[in-house]
Length: 267
Image 1 (spheres, helix red, strand yellow):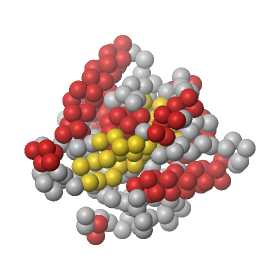
Image 2 (cartoon, rainbow, N blue to C red):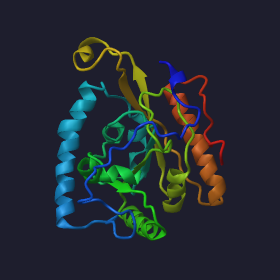
Image 3 (cartoon, one colour):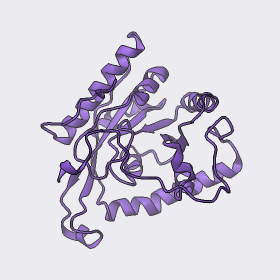
Image 4 (cartoon, rainbow, N blue to C red):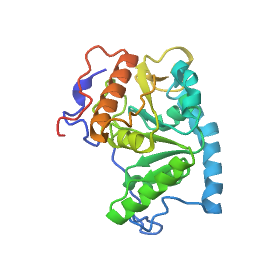
């Protein structure tokens, strides 16, 4: 795979959001957005979203992207330690990688994903919202409501999924630097980090019938979890968790000379 086509800035956005032209139904990402939505309408659409993930997107993942869960031993071994919730992380490398993570950790419901707000006014907004997406607010008032929502989800023992690389680079084979948000949440809520890593393999056999020959197939693996240490100061432990999770993902992916450090150079 030619990695020279990717930029030198690991957080450069390569996938543009197609925002709908009409102002009808557009969300404002301030305190007015329902970050914690307990309405019947939302619960019903979440229920429908579950079936869309399981019966439609999971099939697309299986055949078009060849998604295969190769290793769940770490998940099964630590399952009891995840009973009060956890924070899954993954490299962000194709359109439906969130659903691949759902498949790997068997969490198709009650898993919440902080996401770039503009997606919620785009053409895929219904799917994004009803598969657990929550926009990262654009105002201080919105951030207070966002934090309150995640406080409640953590209290309920639900899972979060965060892509610490922040932006999607399709089919990228290396692990980019991590923003600190997932690890700050892990320390705040005293929840384990469950690193998942997606790698690419050559399209062979029957998979050639479902996608172009140059489109690689995805394999997802679950790494050993990373646990916060509340006896350590938050800033130091967040750095430690980022470095540890990054190293586990690089090792599990079999990358010998990863281009990027765990901590971005601009911090």
